[in-house]
Each structure stands twice: as C-alpha cells, then as structure tokens.
Image 1 (cartoon, rainbow, N blue to C red):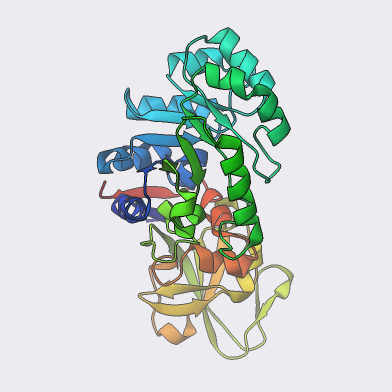
Image 2: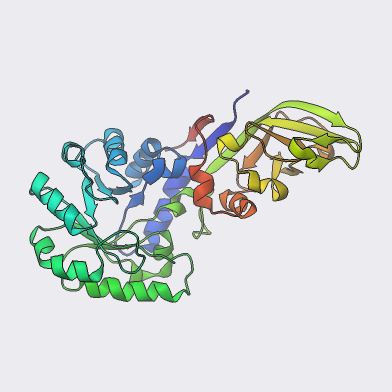
Length: 345
C-alpha cells in the first residue's frame, strides 16, 4: 500500500470515556470539537453515544450541525462559541445549545430563538471566553429568568494539579453560580483528575478520551503506519536530505517513507524521533520534508515494508515532547491524506 494508514481505536476512546466517567461524580459529557481532535467526530461521537455519552461539546455551530447529522435526534450538543451572527437557523434547525458568552449573545439568542435552550459560559479567570463577574452580576437575574440549561467555565491550569490558579478559579466559579439552581459544568480532563470538588453536575473530558495527557492511564487510541517507498545504501560520508543534515558515519541502509510535514508530522521532531519496525526503533535520518522522511534502518538487517511513527510504544505526547509542542497539536494536525481505518465502536 502506498498510502500511510492512520488507525483509530474507537473501543479505546470509549474505554477512556468510561474510565473518566468512573472518576466523575455527575454526568460525563464528551468534547468532540475540531473533528474529535482530528480523529473523526462522526465515528467517535457515535461510538461514545453507544457507550453512554448523552451530551457533547463542539467549538462552533457548523461543527454542531455536522454532529447532529451524525448522531440524529436525542443527544445534547453544546456549542462553546455561543450564538454568533448568522447562527440562528443552524442552532434552531439542528437543535443545538449555544453556551452564551456575553450579554450581546444573550440578546441575539432570545430575540432570534425565544424559548430555545441555551447555556451560559462564565469567565472564572482564564480571560478567554465567557461573562466576567461584573457582567454576570448585571445580567444574572435576566439570564436565570430565561431558564438556562447549564452554567460552565473553563480551567486554565488543570494539567498542573498544584497550580494555585485551579483553586482561585474554583472559588470564583462557586461565587458566580451560588444559589442559581442551574446545572454546573467546570471540569475538563484535567479537572476530572483534580477530584470531586471540581466535578459539579457535569464533567466534559476532551484530550483524555483520545489518549493524551494529563490522563496518564488512558488507553492508546492512534496508530500511524507509513509505507516504505524505497531503500538505498550509503557509503560513509554520503548525506541525506535537504541541507545535508544527515551524514553517514558507516555503511548505512536508508528507508524513505511516504509522509511528511504536509501530513502533520512536524519538522521540529526530527532530531529526537524514531520510527519502529515491529518494535525496533529506527532513527530518522535528516530533515522531515513535505512528503517524505528518511529513516536509518541499518541495524534491522532487512528492508521493512512500513514503519510506525505513532503507536503504543511512541504515543502522541512523546512526539509532542520531541517537537516542543503538546499532544493536542499532534492529533489535530494529522492530515487528510491518510487512509483511515477504524477499529471497534
């Protein structure tokens, strides 16, 4: 096969959701924004719905509309960006629930879709989305009079359990939501792991479902196998790739695989990343280019048909560390050229 294969284990996604659900004290939703972190929201969300998830979160209304098409009626689909101009028909027709971020959004929603459900996002200190305490204090009674379905906020430092920001935000969120009688949602994956104080009525794990930190016990979800196009021998002193960035120090066997930074494999990871042939690590040789990567397979003693970049032995967070980024970016950068194969679900 000449196309790289991205294998996505839907059973592992569901197992990770169940494990986080087992640690949560209320309902456990699922964040499937950005096409389920690049892994296919339609397939992932349908598997999660069969596993028991009844509430989903997406980034924008367009994602919500596509998810409704995949899930059909029933599950709740909440939209983080709220009710943006031009969203009314999509929100109404697709039965979406916007998380309103400002008084302007609240007015827009109530005027365009009176009586339709909505939630409110509160800013407890991240300063990104949501009503700040003063705006909420001025809007609170009007908002509560419209019967919101959910009040939520977002943790800035949940992946650092000892960071003082976590407790600071928790105290702020409690103050803003006291005596509202509305279901509350605060915890992302990291928030679930912070413990019951952060759980409230609903948690909403995201990256932990897909095998990433800070959920260290997560089952691996993604495997990426890259086909070998050609193998060649190098004499000592010969070089590989752009800028002569690899020089053979011995008689060397080089395999060139069909993938590169156009497929979301970051150039920055080349110096510290290897690929695996049936579990044996093989170092990259030279730079990662747009469509090709060269790999030193000398010590294998044979020419592999494919090499694995992502899998149980080398997960998304290892690649992220090698590239100086985070697992979220590794997953969401995976490109459209892969042949996708889904297991389970």
